[in-house]
Each structure stands twice: as structure tokens, then as C-alpha cells.
Length: 112
Image 1 (tube, rainbow, N blue to C red):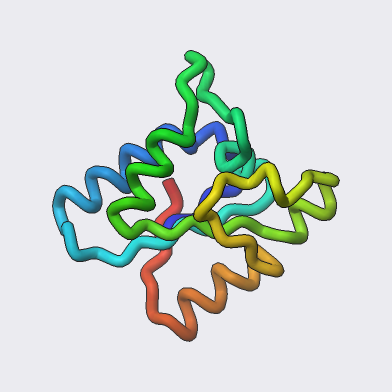
Image 2 (image 1 turned 90 degrees about the vertical axis):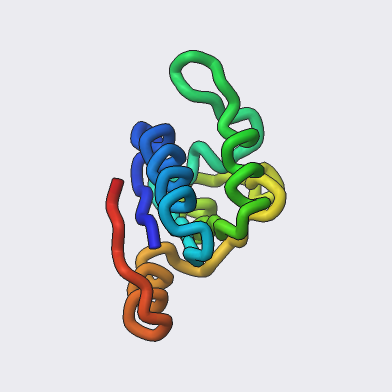
């Protein structure tokens, strides 16, 4: 499970995820986002060079990577849930999701 709470590391995280899948193609990977970490999963989001994130996200989703977005962040920042990229799952709380995925589902925590 990858934890992203700052979209400034989204590019690094995308590379980490690609490398992880290259090394272990059968790995089940989940990305949990909250706070400013959700920004790269919103419509129109792009890196500092103007490259859209949705392409890399869609490629990773096609390989089975799950992206989860914190609803508390959406509400707190007054972001319309409809702007979240299709395929990303909105969860009630990003922090609670981190704990659940680690404790109940046995995932290892990775912080890019």
C-alpha cells in the first residue's frame, strides 16, 4: 500500500509503482490518498511540466493498481467528487483506510 498525502511526490510514486510491478507483476497494489495527496487524481491534474497524471494513473489501473481518495478531504476542501478520476474509489477517511488496509488486509506500508 502506497500512502500519498502530497501530490508533489505523485510523479515519484507513479515511477515507484511501475517499478514495483516490473519487479513483481502479480503484486496487488493500493494507493491511499488524502490531504493535498489527492490533487493528482483530479480531472485536469498535471505535473510541473504540464504532463497530465491521468495517463499514468489509467495505465496503472489497467494493471490492477487501486487508487483510493479520502472523502473527508473532498468535503473539507469543498472539492466536487465528480472531479475525481474515473476508477478511483472514494473512501470515507484516508487515514482510517491506511489503518484498515494494513491491519485487516495485511498490506505493507510504503511512503514514496
